[in-house]
Image (cartoon, rainbow, N blue to C red):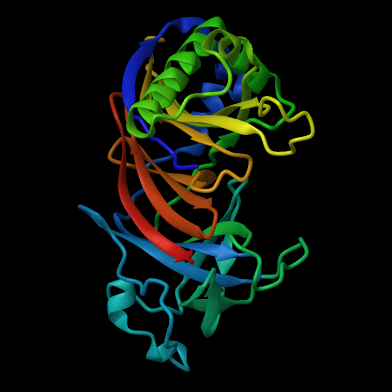
Length: 334
């Protein structure tokens, strides 16, 4: 099934404010301290101890000077052989600081360059002395598990709060009258768009779709300014194919977007996408939040996007009036 993506922005009533219970604003404020050193590099740390740089900030803008995945990556033999261009003049030996997903920092020692699998491609990474407490996955597992973010420079990472699957915050959001109405609007726009382009009709009538429960699959948030909070969500509705009681493949509506709550309590939705998939969800993207950096009063989320046969890394700037991706770079694909 081909997918359709729509983007739109509107304001939501304060009925969605129960998600503020994920974490107190005081704790968010303590986590997200401004970064003093404004030139630094960011890397993801794989569970096998391989460090993969993917972003550099040079006081003004974000870029990725590190090699992107390719069919024939060529790694230098020694750390001294790593091109200074790849880290904007900094030494690959560091010092690197590891920030785990729960916000804890510790030194990270780099030992040598290495080559690793990146879906159907390969890339150059930096082998470290890190040893995970979790079982190490086989090299062909994709996207490969990530345990932390590492920083070369003085940037400090704050924790992105995650609402667990059984948390009341997910249930409250999914059952909110305003959220249900908004989800229905996004779903109808996606269905109508697909119908116009391909002549496709949804097998479940609109009134029955509106009665289907919504599942909030993911809910993440962090503070963006004094008293303000930004949240990201992924939510779904599932439908059985008509006439086939034994069908094991559901039709799925996925809606993703950002909720920005200003200090005044006003809430708005930004960069929302609605899509239709079969049960395999080929073409869907899922976020893994890795951490947040404060720069000039704005939070910058460090995230991984992944789906069937690919992964990407991104830096997303969140503020009181907008959410925008300032860097997106490939992490491997097929």
